[in-house]
Image (tube, rainbow, N blue to C red; front, side):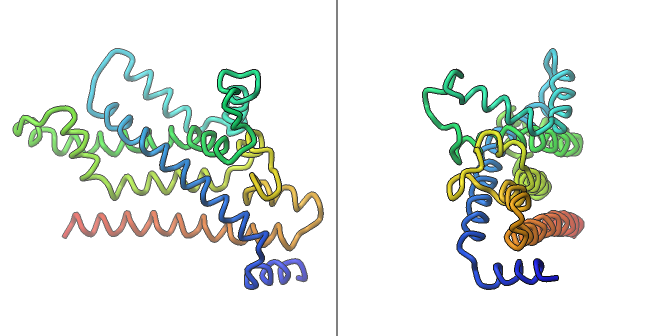
Length: 231
């Protein structure tokens, strides 16, 4: 299979174009997950620990946004950042920053929803103890976030997997500019259409390897945390 052999040669030889695309993809996805985590983890904890009018509707909305079509997110961010949009004055459309914003919005509901479920389950276990210790709302959020950190890491890995595999959102807001906003997924789509199969397959192999590594890491963290809790 000549194309497959060529793909492996690009990887083994450390092809500059291929690894520049990989570095940008990782930088964008990791940054997006970090931003989404800063908002999503506290949001999920607050939803798990507080009761207020409209809470159920908000949870349903959050869960529904987990399956939000990526191109819709991309379109919304494009409209916000375009020259005629409310944030167009900053001129960040078709830049890596725009891609980070779009991916952060895409994975935020995933992280927040999984965090809410995790914290809510843990709250049932520790409710009496924390109430007896007269721990305030902020203390409860901090305590339960810390105690469930290994389970929440799985949520972050799930968010990263979604971000790393995304193509529609980053294509819309990033423009797939060579050497500037071209990620693994958008490059695969473009190079395949151009007939440059070795580069497309090389990126595909790396992307598959990353997704498998993420899932293995999530499984390993879950097993390790369960063994640690049981021990």
